Image 1 (spheres, rainbow, N blue to C red):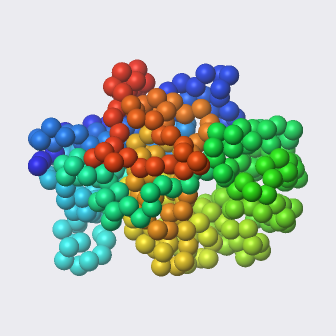
Image 2: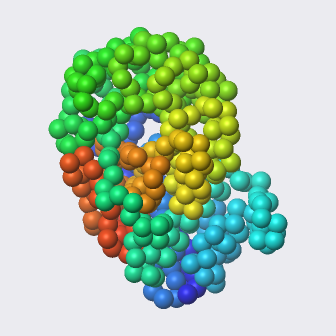
Length: 388
């Protein structure tokens, strides 16, 4: 089995103005990602997704060029089932041959940034290919099904005071048992964020899980003030209270509250997550499979979490390929206890593939089909592909 082609495309789906939301990232008027496809001489094609940003905005021209011009030539003619070898080839470059002999990494300069994002998309596609070649779902290849289904929390919550409770209640009415709302600099002040959280808890009652996400926008002191003001709201976690560049500050926030701290959606490779753990800055790790290094590297990150008694809640704000990869990982991995289900307008999640992701009693059930178990709607792909 040999790789014959590696293709990447920038997908951009426009969001109608009446369904767009605004956050600290600005107006979310489109959903963007990079679709990766790997063809083989057996007729199988693997699907992957690579992201250059944690949100739905972003310019994907550079990552498409990177995959086509730099990484694809390293893959053509190789056996796609040698996933670890291919990952190390892309991550270590011309020194990859030392890895097997010495047992450690020799990474290229671009071991962070869009190179690892590109590796992520390629790696997901290789796992999809492996499953298709063996006639098995990816979760089977990851060790089998530990659980039949996984809880999915609704990710949204941008409405202001007076509206956020109703907005989150709508997610619960759709079947979710836990919800996540946004706070931070999108609000007028720390007091405003705290008031929105109090409204949410009062509306939802004590039996619905409630998490908050500050998108890394507060200072340490602002995050600490917020945590004190909502200490009695029984939050499941406070996500990215401060900038991801301020690991020491995040550790300071964590030490000052008993609200669990979640982080990691923009981190790449197990080495970055190791640093978060060693700094005692996190309780819930949130790798994005399309950013952190693909399924291969996310499995390693999960092993780190298990070693340190932490849990994992993958960041899944993206398209259907990313979401499917997170679902397969979740049902096979003990430390993954919940999945993010984006409730902003997301055509790349709901319109891109033939098979819908259906919430059943607050849970998602993995596909039994080979690979990731998803089928692209080619007409949709063609209609939203940005011309090079």
